[in-house]
Length: 174
Image 1 (tube, rainbow, N blue to C red):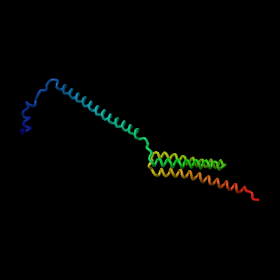
Image 2: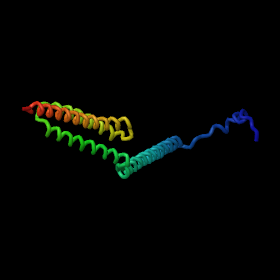
Image 3: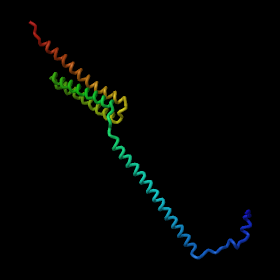
Image 4: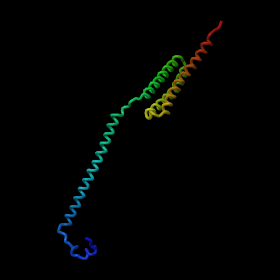
């Protein structure tokens, strides 16, 4: 079955064939139909991809809403307990400080300091909610609470000393 290609083209009668009438229009119709089928297939594939992406997004949303309820760990429970204990002590010391002192200027001065610490405390708690495993944020939260409590205790001790000096000076020895 070996043939020389040059021999095939020597016989020109075989090459010249007359195409049937309307062949060109039939060929163009077939090309147009092939284009339409191709665009339909592309449209369906794009639709399938979009449906798959939508399904994945919906499943992710459902999973996030179903299983993302915060489960408190033992660490978070201990942290809340420590935080509540410090806040109770701070309130208790502040109330006892207000009972001991009569100086409104001193009270206002220390109220401003406590408010500044409270603003820092709120910032730190939001940072802690964003990254609960960050040990530096946790340490700064505890440090803030300790500083607030110590500030109030120092103020109270100072007022007690002043009150003792005032009462000892008023004592008359006969």
